[in-house]
Image (cartoon, rainbow, N blue to C red; front, side, top):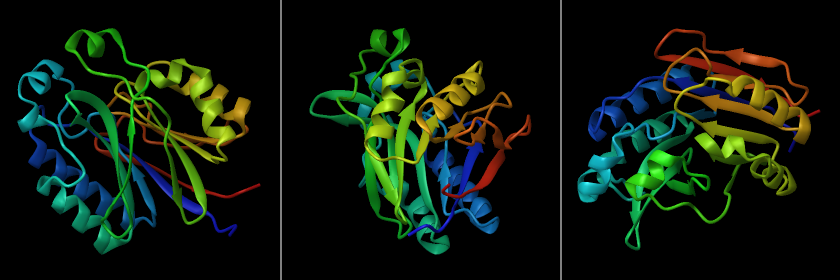
Amino acid sequence: MNAPLVLAAGQAPCVALDVPANVAAAATLVRRAAAQGAELLVLPELFLTGHDLTAVVVEPAKYTVNDTDSRLDPLAEACAETRTAAVLGAPIAEDGQILNSLHVIGRGGQPAGRYDKQHLNATERAAGLSPGEHGHTVTLDSWRIGLAIGEDLDHPEHARAAARDGCLVYAVAGRWPAGAAATLTRLATDNGLFAVLAAHRGAGTGVWHPEGEPLAEAGAVEPALALAELTRG
């Protein structure tokens, strides 16, 4: 029950509106992370499409990705082959709404959960995206992991809710890391959580201890992994 968790945060750009290419890149990063011992890889916000939300809204059948989409198969296969779970961002269409979401793919390659971003930015609202209604906790080998996207970080109650739900880790899929390290350090220490950020670029991807010190940082290289072994206190 008290086994450590080896977690990787991936820092990588994506190809705008090219879902198959980005799935292939994600599969490569899963294998790379697994080769270094990772049991979970967190990838950035909207990793499968990029941030051209106008195109997503105009052609949702082409650019949204639900959890049974066959385009995810190469990534699911990589997760199953390596026994490494993955979290990554993609827009999802559901009930006439488009949401900025995180897919969770389990260690067996199966869909294992989904989180919809609750706190949208002005660009997302203008494009017509809808906010998610609640948080989402993933359990991996008895580790409870709360998921977040981008501007969720600006709302401290989001991380507090994860902590109240018994999470030990707060995993954030972001876009740009400007200012995020200071915010994550504060959220980690305020809530007793390991904090994780996966960003597209900008040398901000990393993992932070509940006491605030950085455990791993990706640096300025792209693609790159920030990998850390998390141990319960």
